Image 1: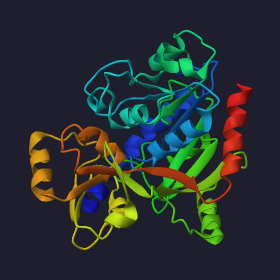
Image 2: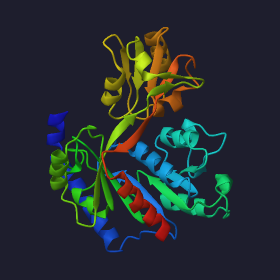
Image 3: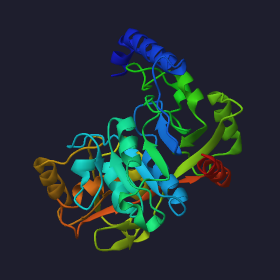
Image 4: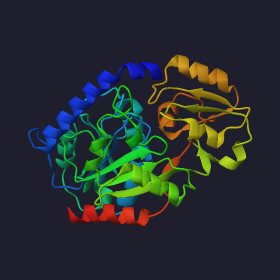
Length: 347
């Protein structure tokens, strides 16, 4: 695979040239970017997948939803519906996609919408009536919209951009697809207001942080933060919870259909555990469910929160649990919160 990527280097150069021309046309106003008179925050990355966008969106929801009517807008990757969909009680992971459905189930006081055409999706959200109370949000014009995985969606001009890059896999060390994993040139990082290095070791030293800052070479106007994945102290089923400390030594089946599952496995695994790995955003078919059942036998099954929303109606509820995660910051999270709140308040 590595050798094949090297062979495809000329195509990476061509792809980089095409994306650079596209960005140039947007930068010069030749291709139109649509702005809106509402705070819009876009969260995304330069590389393909696995940088922690979902926990970062959830961080913003927790920060903003106590004070503002919040809506999330995603494309709904691998969903089986089309066009604009606003989540309601009839929604599921197949209609919305797994991550938007996770938002919908987890945060009852926000709106969750999907639309591959972000401009159309924003217009649909803004066409709703204005209400005064946060309790009336289900069919109300939002105060702020969070765009999930929209850093390259330049037909919409967000007011604030958060760029994520994974520790150990920085965009500054990467190259264009298909030789590397970049969707666009590293110069695209200049559009970001904030850059967050995600999935850091919780004990990352200040010296190492400084080295990374030097590698990224951000502008003086850009802010840099370091975050890590913070695991919940319990696992959860539809009906109950169990402390992680009680299940670490038990024999169990660990199951993940996410981009980079190794940290999830490492956090829970003992030497006797079974593991099943599926592609990111995998839709579980009957043969998958049979494989899971045969592997699990009478053991508990622990999966990621994203996989749980696709599996919870398909597998015995008394066996299936998920481990929630959230994005936590090594330091300066109060400064980040203030930066975001100031942006929302000033628009």
